[in-house]
Amino acid sequence: MTKQPRRERLQAERTRQLWLFPLISVVMLVVAANAWRDIQAGETGFLDYMRLGLPIFYAWLVVAVVMGWDFISLRERKYLDDELSRAFRAQSLGLAFVVLMAAGTIVLAISLWRPDWTVPSIVLAVTLGGSVAGARFAWLDRQAGRSDG
Image (cartoon, rainbow, N blue to C red):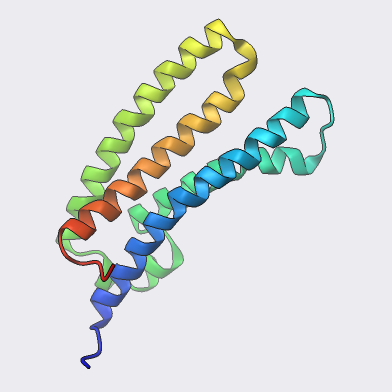
């Protein structure tokens, strides 16, 4: 059995992460929704605000991985920052930007209609934008045949 070259192994690992993080973000949205319910009920504590921010944190984490700003990507830049990855990055972030703009527009409408839904709508919009960036990058990578999945 041939050992998988380091470049392919690192790129496959990044792709697995980028499939996993959006799924984790969905779970974090449920956690955030419960935290928002507690905040609205007046049962607030520091942990509720932290739980509300978890999906935002994961959205930023996904974007950091897509951009190559995470620790592994920075350390292994020569393997993970090739021309194809840059093209995937541009396509992924372009789509994520359009999704974020559309979601922001919807959040504006929601905030005019139901101001009390503004905060969870913003959390959802940012999470959606980050998740789209990660999922699109992973999908493009898989389509290119780089993933071992």
